[in-house]
Length: 253
Length: 177
Image (cartoon, rainbow over the protein chains, first blue to last red):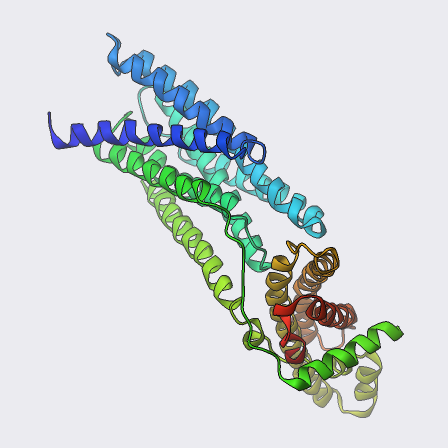
């Protein structure tokens, strides 16, 4: 048993055990009401892990059936992740009704733009793997990663420009997903270029990133929501005069 | 190979920008520790004067065309500064008001809600006004009057004062505006 073998098993099993903790915490704190898609995503990730782990331990090992199951799981997981991103957008703009229209416009425009970019990339670099399934899976993963990381960066940019504040739960979910999508974009591109399914170094890197993302989700979802507080020095007397003058003007309007 | 390298570089860039944007959240939280220190004074009347079409018309008729274009560019550059300052103040006040929205006092929460709404509007107007002002610098003859910024800023200032009276921690801010 080599170190890399033990490490790969640790990085495969541990994040899913931690996801179990997240599911438990979400049920306990009723966070599944606020983030139903994220709850579904974490539950699905655990289920997918159980199925894939069982297949890998059977006589099939990491053969064609495993790749098929992995591809189906990836497609469903990606679809759920899109649901989570949509949920984050909705959750965010619900807090700022003034920006609802602009937010919808941003979400649609960013999706169309990123979709066109991802399709352009898919056409220009279709991959050179012998297996159609591996090629399709990696190309799909790459396209989804372009869209997901782009959408999350748009959301972060938008919130930064308008100086909007995030609730820490939503922030943690978005940050974790964003990191994972960005790294996925690189790994799926390399996979597609190499044309082989599975590369030890790349697998370990992807799994370590996923582990980090799960830790980020845990950190933000398990700790209580922090209330923003600020302290100002007592105001000088003339401030009160300004207030009074301004209030008088307000009342007289 | 080239596409793969480009995509890997894009993903690194995406990751870096994501972390940078996420870090901005902490910086904003630090600003909240003492908002009045970060607010910059904005003279609404001076801004109004800079974007007043009558004033512009007066300068156009009384100055030689090259001189008018030069002066108009200077005026619009100053107007951009004013709008940027107002937008920056709006961003800080938005954070302050956001915290006030969670107040148990309904009057404070309502005033904070209005301030959030107003500050967002101001940032929206600013994002539309700044490119128009720059366009005005390129084409000094074009009519540009982003007076909604001034109105929105005044309305926001009044709300800050109201919120300041309702909620203890915002005191001191109104004087900085």
